[in-house]
Length: 398
Image (cartoon, rainbow, N blue to C red; front, top):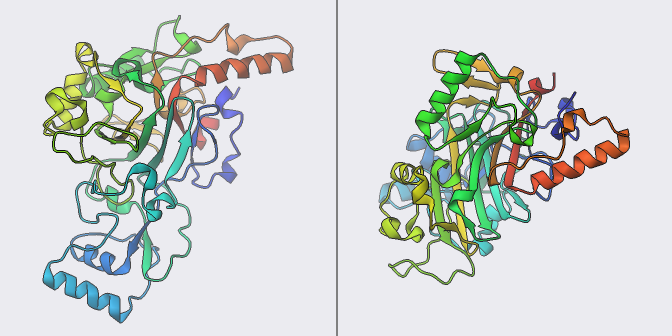
């Protein structure tokens, strides 16, 4: 039978990015519609001309409009004079420019760009951007004169990465670092792969993050399924902490730290100055931050503050969303057969998953009453999540 989370899915024929379908899990956000992946980015044609000359790329099929003589002349003059292009997306940079308007007054261009998905719930309010390699994009449509849309191909060029999820927003409550976890939590037990494959997969994950907590084989696992989780602050590839609109604190330099842009073929810069202590210098690299917080004792005394804006960049190269496979290096394992018709997730949860009352997979009461009881229990369970994005592949419904 389909999993509870699959009941409200539209048929694959209606998926705009088939064979993939991204959405927030029911009851975890203010909408569950299809999330856009590989967002188109609006760039000035003159700046695009400059970017292509410095090693950028264009995807065939992108809308290329003829530059006017004036914009072409400005572009050539800028190259000859060595001027910085007026590209709002920071083309050619390795990290997104932090200098921008406050979060609640972000630029008109980015605030209204397709591909930035806003959401909110009782624990977190923010927005996200999703990129997937070798996956279809939605139609870019027309662009105003003087601009052109390009897609996410620039981001993946020269990288092994297969997916990126950026989360940016504010926590609604002061929450200890130790209680905000990320990973996978299954609503019902998955069909585990052969023991050698499971051990190999877990060894790879542990080598990347020794702080994981996993329960994949015990019969008394909570939530009727299994989980593999680790502290969010020790797992995100990049963490950027900025002042929010109401933040009163300032870094030692006296300058406000602004949140980074979400669009453009660039990486989110590591910025943890506002954590204070060893991080106050602003010189702690992401690898050291991850290793530091992989020790449980180092999580103590740190909190996600509601008056700050957090940006988490999750990118990886092991899971291949377009084929629903896990790359073991020498072998690509199709994980759809082991997930028990459940999606892969990008999520953050408050503490370990709570156990649902009773065995929801064997509830034989009155059909309508039993379904309402199961739905109510799942809704209470989903209220633990700061965000929970489901990554569906049509193979999971077979």
